[in-house]
Image (cartoon, rainbow, N blue to C red; front, top):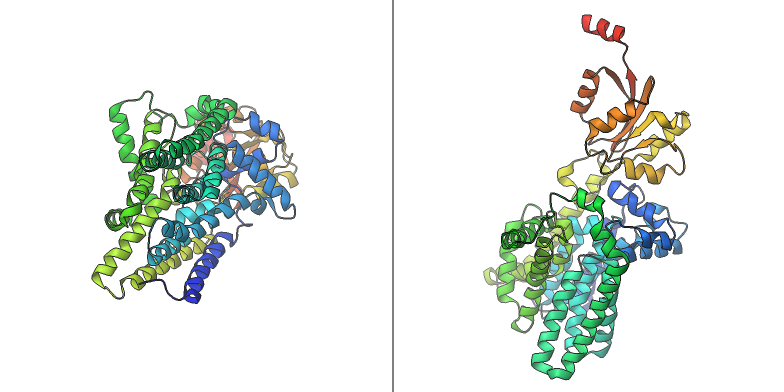
Length: 504
């Protein structure tokens, strides 16, 4: 299938972008900040000087950008205003894929397959709606090879734009550092071999700006983040103690074992096979660059993880691999079907991508409409809702004494954000001190005279926990629930009452 008439091409692309926008925007205001977002929202509410002093695991530039953009639309609720940056980044990534495909020599059909798949892919939809920086990993991973390719073709403006983007990258994204480094290594080597020392010097100047920006970011913020005891404790099981060759081998395996099933849930092996086909049939002129942007970026992430400075265990840390892998997979699908049905294969490939986008988009929207039930197995694919705000309102309205309230580990960050100065003095669990529930609960309970209130998420409000508390001589009543959260009233049972109840 060649390029169709321009009106058909525009209609197909516009429809995909409309679907992408709808599936990402629908019910966005009804999605409260859950624990992974709430601390970012709280951080964005601070002054810039306070943001720069923090040691949280998030790019400081991303937080400042979120703060600035949200301030431009003060009428929007924070659940929308603070998510405008990831939303825009996610949509721009989808829109750029056909352009990136064409710049790398791919066909119109391959670009459309990639566009439609990206429209509904659960991971890409999720992080367009999530107040985290991974959507910028995606956007930069699409922009960097596009600008690199145009700069290598001699477009001066692209070279300037790329240099500026490289300087900005260390401040707004962690994951995009890998494709940025991969792109610079490839471009510098190619310019030296084909353009001579003068052209290579121009690329080395861009690389120097990138390196100086990384150094500045490390000196001001990244060094504190890397050395943070809190972060080390949270990720201690995933971070190796020292670099080793076996550790590097495991990391090279993990980077693909984690990313591919995350991008294509349920069909990861099929996607990998198609990507291999795509790598074999991609136009020779740009084939090495595209494969390098996938495998080279992955190898750098693996090396960094083996040295103890990055996490690979979960696919969301590897979203920067999505653009090149998606293009290769799309190219493999088109080529395979073209070989089987020479006249209709490309149309069939686009149709499969459209159906896939419709299926994934329908899943995402249906998940938002169904009653909320936390399912950790589906985390980071579909909306996660822990709506603690109504329970805070209930406690405040009832005039509950703050010292009688305990907020569980997973509800702690949303509680801090949504309490708006209320219930000061409640026992709010932190990420470290509440990793073991029972000691933290016993510590709080020791200061409660007769009855207290436990606010927790539904994944924590499991039957075994309630049973364990009741068996320890406590009376538990669920007095209120919200989407994904519960409020328990806890009362000490007198010894007499306990004996009577056992007699019965």
